[in-house]
Amino acid sequence: RKEVEQDPGPFNVPEGATVAFNCTYSNSASQSFFWYRQDCRKEPKLLMSVYSSGNEDGRFTAQLNRASQYISLLIRDSKLSDSATYLCVVRGAASGSARQLTFGSGTQLTVLP
Amino acid sequence: DVKVTQSSRYLVKRTGEKVFLECVQDMDHENMFWYRQDPGLGLRLIYFSYDVKMKEKGDIPEGYSVSREKKERFSLILESASTNQTSMYLCASSLRGRNSPLHFGNGTRLTVT
Image (cartoon, rainbow over all chains, first blue to last red; front, side, top):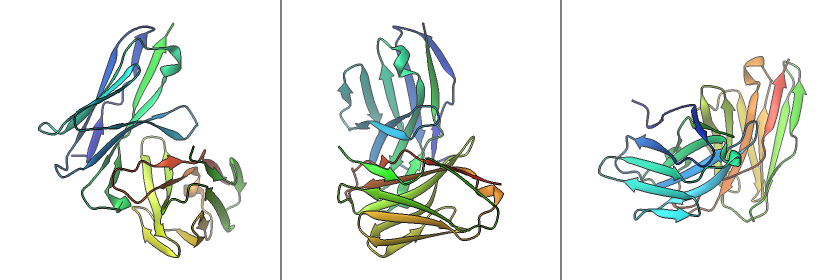
C-alpha cells in the first residue's frame, strides 16, 4: 500500500460545480498535512495547510479525519482557473526530517466552460 | 513572500557532462531540498539539507551530489549526466518547524541527449 494515495482522476466538472478530493495516508503518526496545486509544467504551489479542526480559505475547504486517516479538499463554485493537479502532502512524526514528507501522485481537475 | 529561484528554466546537456543546478532562497530557511518529478512517478526526493554544510540522502541520490556552502544556496550536481536523468528538477525550501510547508522554485527542465 502506498504511504499516500490519491485518486488520479481526471475529474472533469462544469464551471460552478462543487468537487471534492480525498487523500488517504497509511502512517497513523503523521503530523502535518498540506494541499498543493500544480499547473501544467509549473512548480507545485501551496494551496493550504490542513488543520485538525478543518479550515477554509474562500471557496476551498480542507478537512482532516484522523480516525480514518484521510484528508479532503472541497472546492465550491469551481472556476476555469481551478483546473490543475492537486497534490496532497503528508509529514510524519519525526521532526525536521524531510524523509517524512510524502507526496501523493496528484488528482487532475479540469473545469469545463 | 518566499522566493526560491532556480538558475535555469531549461537546460540541454550531453551524456557524460557535469551539470550544476543552482537554487537560491531569500527567506533564511534552514531546510532546502532537491526533487525530481517524472510522469507517473510523482515527486521523488534526491537530497536535502537542514543546515549549512549538512546534507542527507533522499530516496534517489545515486548519480547526484549536493553542496550547501551558504544558507541561501543549495546546488545539485550531476557528476556525469545520463539520459535517465532527463527530468524536471524542483528545488524547495522550508523553515525547520514540523508544520512548515515547502516553497518551490519554478523548476529546471533538464534534457540529457
